[in-house]
Length: 130
Image (tube, rainbow, N blue to C red; front, top):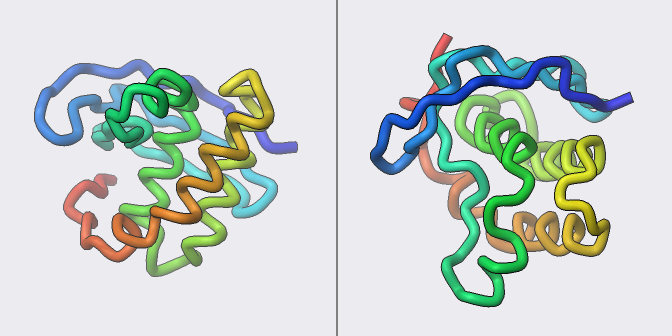
């Protein structure tokens, strides 16, 4: 059963990816198995457009699933497909029930599927640590 094994503490470091993990984040996925986001990894959580209605609905939600998803997009592109990374995002949102409403989880997943091709193709391996 998919679940978060650890919950990290985070530090504000500013910049494009303003949050840094002070501890490893460990997630067990039914799709990929054990995923470890290492201490020192930096994230901006979920990249939700700052369009008022959209941000009000989805901003600040699914933070732990977003960290795992960011790490998969940055550091696992040579091991997995984008579809697998996106399925893990949905799986992790469901495991945390975050956001609470299932329909909002599907909307966020659909947005990642529709718009995630650009960040998937961007070379962000410099963010990978450990």
